[in-house]
Amino acid sequence: MQAGKLNSKITIKRLVKSSDGFGGFTSTLSTVASVWCDLKQINGEINEKFGKRDHEIEVEILMRKKTANLIVIGDIFSVEGGSQNYRINEKFEFDLDYQTKLTATKSN
Image 1 (cartoon, rainbow, N blue to C red):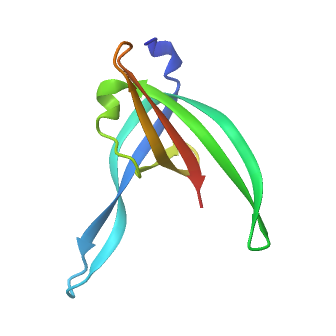
Image 2 (tube, one colour):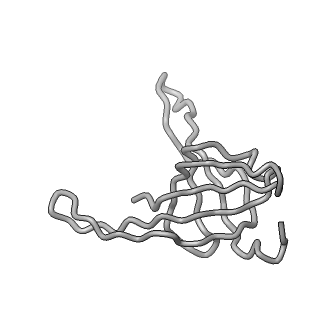
């Protein structure tokens, strides 16, 4: 893997349940890691849901295999400097190149 291609910094977050002090739980996003990756937009569709137009964006992420071991399917990430959140849907590891490919979609 060429380190020069890792040109986007993303922050990985995970939904964590914590006690609210009254016998219940609240869900919050906890930061897992900030990592460098190669981020590419591979698909973008405009769909209509319940009479409202929605732009679905699908991205592909390539990163080092050791770094990707921290990530599980369902984690959320945001690109540094951006406000959009993406949910990780798939994870595929290349053993020969020591890299992992993740696919994610923009979550509202």
